[in-house]
Structures are given as structure tokens and as C-alpha cells.
Length: 254
Length: 297
Image (cartoon, rainbow over all chains, first blue to last red):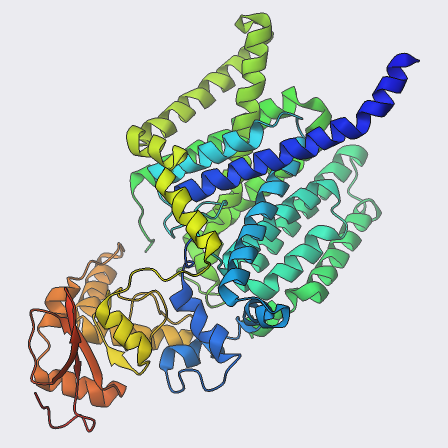
């Protein structure tokens, strides 16, 4: 009786402790990230900025071949709008870029922590994953620079957003695969077409195959009606992806 | 078959992740029985990522499908890496727990021992590849970087040191010719050709290549033809300084007409009979005659 009461009254405290622990862990992970790669102006601004600014101001560097070509590619429509949301919010563009970047890093780590918690309640998993990632990145820097899946960028780029969304989508693929992963990947396609589209194809293919595999294991049958729910869900996943923003990649490929 | 080549270290790192995916996945599947469904789905994602990487590695450079996607398709493998890392860490934690509890290997059957030994061997190999001191330094990071980050938080976008010529060009954003590897500003400036500003549409890439090849004085095309004959591709290293320094006054004027620029940035030690606008430790910025015909000093 007494222990039940104690449990009841200590619940909010335990919850508070858990949240505090998570916050401390996140702060530690961000500090570790910034000690490896400090916050800076941001990577690849020379690649992305021309289209970002031209889409908001048609007179920006008129006649410049690269700016014209970057706009023509059509991939910056939403990224440009995202950057220029700072003017609606009434805050400086650089501050907005930094806030977005830190939010993406926080999102990425939060979903890595959630992913790890599906297996164990130990808080050690993600820090160890981060250490392993960092050591291997040092040994063999990825061919195309930056981190493998943790983006050691120092500032906002389209892929900072796309990677955070991808990790969140992977978590929801395990936890609630019906809607969220496809909606998240659709939204991130608006910001980074190639990465998000490819991730969508990968997740859909893996998930569909997994469903077929588990259905087969259960029924040991090749009848279509056994697999029909998985097929239907894959169609609805594709539809969700397309309407959430994945349709943007059709424009790009066209 | 013409494939982009990478150093052996990359293949070992890839092999390490494949081992982590298969052996780690198998062990995690046994040791985390309640989460078997999650492990299975992660295994499928990891395998698909690996398969996708293989397919694109073999075919994407031969059969372009959607322009621009080849590049990112190779990054599919990073999902294999993520899942490999997760399995590796879960394996290490479980192994440590088992060994701590039993103080012996008796809790592992023979196949688990073999798989664990195999994984530890690969982990050792991958870590051995890390240069210990820089690796450790990289993981721990540098306190100076935290200070820099804090400064950035207090004053976002704070100006980083830029070259004198870069600052001049940033204040006067008009087309200019500069060495393709010039890195004097952090912002985009309308240069004729630069490594960073490659076009990512078919026409854009063609235009970019043509510009870069012109500034390399045809060296890029020569290297491409040479490698094409051997059907073995590797990164091309051009001595840009050497190529750029040999540009004659007449050639600069011809390029000015072709690419429509009046500002010309070159190495400090090179003198041209144009109007000198500004110079810094490494470079000089000249203005050509506005008609691009009669140079003046």
C-alpha cells in the first residue's frame, strides 16, 4: 500500500528526472558535435545560395550562368521559401538558418535515441554509435565529404533537413509504418529531392519485402489474398508520399 | 567496366559494416528476442541499402536514369552503416553484460562465440585503420571549436576573415575570372568557373565542364580521354596554378569576350597590362577595359 503510494507520488519526479537526463544527453551530444565541427556560416552556401536568393529577388545576379542554371533545375523552390521564412518571422536570416540547423541536429539525435530505446533503456547506445561513427569518419572520410548519416556540417544545408527526416522516418517505419514515415519523407522531398526520393524507394522496398516475408512465414502460401493487404498498404504509402510532397520529384525528373 | 575507383580502406570499412549487419544482426536477433520484429525490419533496410549501393555502383555511372540521382544513390550505403553501427553497439553492450554476469564465455554457444570473435576482429581492424591520435582528438573535439560555436550562437553569421580581393568582389558582384580553386569568399560570387559551382542539370554540367576544361587549357579533356582508353577512372589532379598562370593577355581578353566579364583575378606574382584594382597576399584583381579590347595600366 505504502509502496504504491510512494510509486504514485514519485512518478512525476521520475518523469522529470528522465526528461532532464534526456536533455543533458542531448546537450552533451550537441556539444560533442560542435567540438568536432564548430558552428559556422554553413556548408555549400556557394552552391545553394544563388537559387535561394534569385527565387526571392528576380534581379539577383541577372545573367549569371550558374544562378540561371541552379534556378532552372527547379529543386530550390521550397528550400528558398524555408530560408526566407525568416522575414515572416521577423528574425535575421543567419539566426534562422542556425536555429533550423540546431533543430535538425536535435531531431536527428532525438530519433536516434528513440530508435535505440526500442531495444534497450540504456542511455549509452547513442553516444557509442556517435563515437563509432566519428572514429570511422576520421579513418576514412566519406567520398562525398561530411558525415555518414550524422551530418557534421557546421551549418544548414538541404541535407541537414533531409537526414533528420530520414532518421525520424526510419524510427516510424519500425514503430508506426502506416502513415508517418511516408509523410515525413514526402515533406523532406520538398527540401532535398534526390536524397529523400531514394530513401523513400529504399524504405518502401525494404518494408514491402519484409511484409511479404512475414506473411509467407505465417501462411506458407502463395495465394494473392494473403499478400493483398501488404500490396494495398504499399500503394497507400506511395500515395501518401506523393501527396505529402514526393510529387515534387516527378517535376524534377521531368 | 569503367567504375569510379576508391582506396582499399573504403572497401575494408564497407566489409566491416557488412559484417556488422550480418553477424551483428544475427546475434542481436538472438539476444534481443522480444525486439526480433524490429531487428528483422532493420536487417531488410540494411540489406536493401547495401543491394541498392551495389546496383548503383555497377550501373549508375553506365546507365544514367534520372539526372543527378547517381550521386546520391551511392549514399544509400550510409543506411547500412547506421544499422551496422546500431547492431555493433547493441552486440558489444550485450556481450559485456553477459561476460560481466557469468565471468566466462559459457553463456555463449559455439556459433555465438565464432560470430562474436569475427565481429570483434573486424571492429579491431576498423579501429586500427583510425589514426589513433587524430582519431581520439576528433572524437574528443577541440575546446576552441566550442568557443567558436558559442561565438556563432551569440552572433549568427558573424563575418569570417575574407581576403581583400574577396571583399572587393563581394562589394562589386559582377562576373569575373578567377582560378577555379580560388577560395577567397564564403559567399557565392559570379565567377566564370569554380569547383564548387558545378551545374547539376545535363546542360549545366556540360557548360561547367567546358568552362573548367578551358581554364585547365585542355588538360581535363586530355586526362578524360586517357582514362577512357584504359577504362579505369580516378580523380584528376590538375595543377591549376600552372595552367592559369600561363594565360596570356590576349587569351584573357578572348575569354572576356566569350564569357562576358571585366574583372580578372590572378596570382600576385603575375603582372598584366590591365588596371590594378586591389591586391592581397596571394592575388591581384585587375579590371579589363570595358570593351575588352584596349588594355590599360
